[in-house]
Amino acid sequence: MISNFKVKAVRTVTSPSNEKVTTYFVWTEFRDLPNHISLEVNPRKPKMNTAVAKQLIAAVKNPETNFDLNNRGIVVTAKGFKFNTNDHTVHLDLGEEAENTLYGILDGGHTYTAIVENRDELPDNAKKYVRLEILVGEELDVSSLADARNTSAQVSDIALFELDDKFEFVKAAIANEVYKNEVAYKDNDNKRIPIAELLKLMFAFNIKRFPDDGSAPVSAYSGKAAVFRDYKKSFEDGQSDTEKNIYELLAKQLPKLVELYERIQSDLPKVYATYKKETDGNTGRFGGIRGIESRGDFTTLFTAEPISHNISIGFILPIFGAFRALLDESGNELKWSFDPIEIWEKAAVRLVQNTFDTDTNPQLAGKSKTLWQSNYRIVDSVRKDMLLEQLMKQMNEK
Image 1 (cartoon, rainbow, N blue to C red):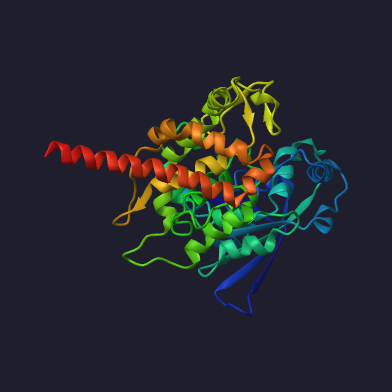
Image 2: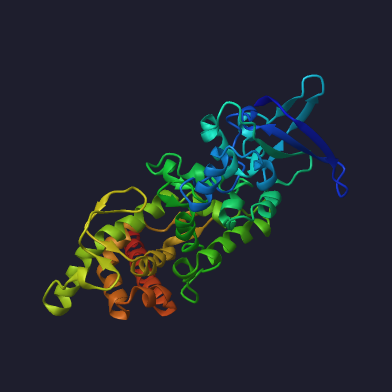
């Protein structure tokens, strides 16, 4: 994308620490600021209904002309920059569409949005300027720059990580799923499903960190930061030619993980009723348990299918995570020893009974390592029984 626009002044500075990076300070009138500069490089989507954003909009509309002195301006990364001194026009090269996570507005997205959406309301004779700081160079580290520059409001580590394209195989894995366009990879992205929700599912099945019942992925419930650190660490540790990143392998299983999670989520009320009838002679009152709502219109998190109850993940995750007992790594692939949905149908009552007999407080249940471990053993025992059945069948057929 090429943008040509008039400017009032240009100043050029070469970085003393890296002569291959040049910063151009440009002052341009509001009306000359180009439309459609990419915001994809910015890890935080502009959210224009906040108090700060409303103040920015008011400052844009105000006929006072000192905006460029009071505002921090807009930071842009660009592939190329040329200034024509004859007509005071800047030629800004923002790269191809495929490079929109490298070139565009790095910081100041709220300022940019406030200007382009409201400048037409200024009086015709009002001349207001904004300062652009445009960084150009072959050795620009966009992710590090975004981390350092986005200090006006907290930017999540997850959002910054997306700039390095380290969620690409997650996007590829869910490309055929109904929720593929509903995942938010950036802060303030107006979508239903934070990427953290998918990371939690994979973390709960990280069989390299949690290979058996000796440990438990409790942080899937108790700590989003811990989940992301684990995901990030898998990249920082690198991978060999013979061994793939565990999350790259787990991402391929996301459709099945989502299916399993939502099956547990939707089945829990009726399975709970079965367990209570078997043990107490009545179906119990599932909606009366702390952390469970029965009045309202509820849907599953990912596919947005209607469900009867809103259930705290503190009850769901210790059941869901138990099914990692069915996952094995073989030849740089993860394979299921048995379909987890089939095992859920066999083990559901035992798992639900064990979960609610352990604790009816979802916060305590979700953080209970003992519960995670005992649920794992239930699934593992069903797996072993089915393997034995298969072996006996094979022997009888001989």
